[in-house]
Length: 515
Ligand code: ADP
Image (tube, rainbow, N blue to C red; front, side):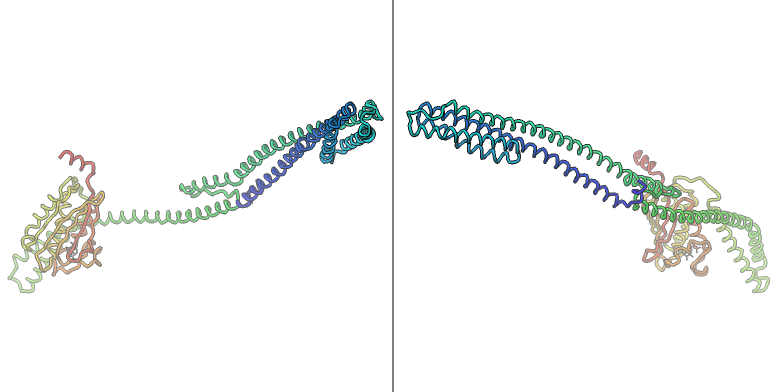
C-alpha cells in the first residue's frame, strides 16, 4: 500500500486493468485446455472406440456368415446358398478397412486385427476356397475336406475375434475412465476459475478502495471541513499522487485565505476602533455644539437686546457712522441668534427623544405648508401631493423635513411661480417620498456637499439662509432609519428623495381587512 500511496491514480487503474486482463487470459487458457482434454477424451470414445467395436461386430458377423453360407453350400451344392458367403467376404473386407483406419494408433488392437485377418485368410485359402472349387467341379461328389476339418480351421478365427473384442472393450473402459477424469478436471478448472475470479475481483475492489476511493473520500471530507470555514485545518496529503497534489493545492489556497483573513481581521479591528473613536468624537462634538449653542444663547440675547436698546435710545442722537455701527451690531447679533438657534435645533435631533407615533405624511405635509403659508402666498406657489403613506415618526421632526424641503423649493425658485410636487412609492420595506420643484436646480457635482452643515452654494445676499436645513433633514431621516439624497437624474428643477421604513406589513394587512 506504501507503493500504491506513491503511485499516480492513472497507474493504479492501469495496473488493476492489466491484472484483470492477465487473469482473464489465464482463465481462458486453463479453461480452454480442460475443455480441449474433455473433447479429446470424448472423441476417443465416441469417434473411435465405439465405431471400432461396431466394425468388429460387423467383421464377426461377416466371418460367421461366410462360415454358415459355406456349410449350407456343402450340404446343398446350391449356388444361391453361397450368397451369404460372398456377401460376407465383401462385408469382411469393408469392416477390415474401417477397422484399420480406426485402430491406427492402437497397436495392440491392430495386431489382434492382423491375427484375425491372418486366421480368416488361412481358413479361406486352406478350406473355403478348395471346398468351393471341389463342389464346382463335381457337385455330387464329397469335397476333399470335411466340415469338421473346416470348423477346426475356423475356431482360431473365433478366438482371435474374441481377443480383438476383449482388447477393444478394455480400451473403451480405459477411454471412459479418461473421459470421466477429463470431465472432473474441467469441472475443477471451472470452479477454480470462478473462485479465482471472485478473489481477483474482491482483491481489486478492496485494493482500489484502499488506494483510490478511500483517499478521495478522505480528501473530500477534509476539503469540506475547510470549505465550512475551518481554515486552520491542514489537509492531509496522502493517497495517489494526484490527490496529494490536490491536497497541497488546497493547503496553499487555505493558507492564502488565512493570511487574507487575518489581514481583513486586522483591518476590521482598526475600522472598529476608528468607528468607536469617530462615534466618541461625534458624540463629544454634538455635546459641545449643544452646550455651546445652549450656553451662548443667554449672553447673546443680552448682547442683542442691549444693541437694540442702544439703537432705540441713541438713533439720530449720535453721528451717522455711530448709527451705522449700531445697525451692524444689531444685525450681527440677530444673525448669530438665528445661527445659534438652528445649531441648537440641529443638535437636539435624537438627543431630545419624543414619542414616535404613526402619522399620515399628508397630515405632516399639511402642518408644514401651514407653517409656510406666508411664503407660499407671497411666491404664488402651488404645492401638490399624491396619496402619501402613514409612517412612524416624531411629528415635529418630520414636519421640519417637509418644511425645509418645501421652504428651499420656494426660496430657490426660478422665474415662474414655484411648483412643488410630492410623490410616494413603496420600495420593498421602505416608502420612498420625493419632493420635486421647478426652481433653479442644483449641479449634480454638489449633490453631497449640500447636506453638510453650514455648506451653501449661494451667498446670503442672493438667497438668505444658514446652510443647516439639509444637514438637519439628513440627520432627522437617518434618525428615523431612512436615507435622503438628491436625485441627480432630473432635467430641470431639483428633486429630493428620502425613505422611511414601512410600518410592519402584517399590521397594514390587518388594517385593510378591518376596513
Ligand atoms: P439654506 O437653505 O439655508 O441655504 P440648506 O442646507 O437648506 O441651506 O441648503 C443648502 C444649499 O443647497 C442651499 O444653499 C442651496 O444652494 C441648495 N439647495 C437646497 N435646496 C435647493 C432647491 N430646492 N433648489 C436649489 N438649490 C437648493
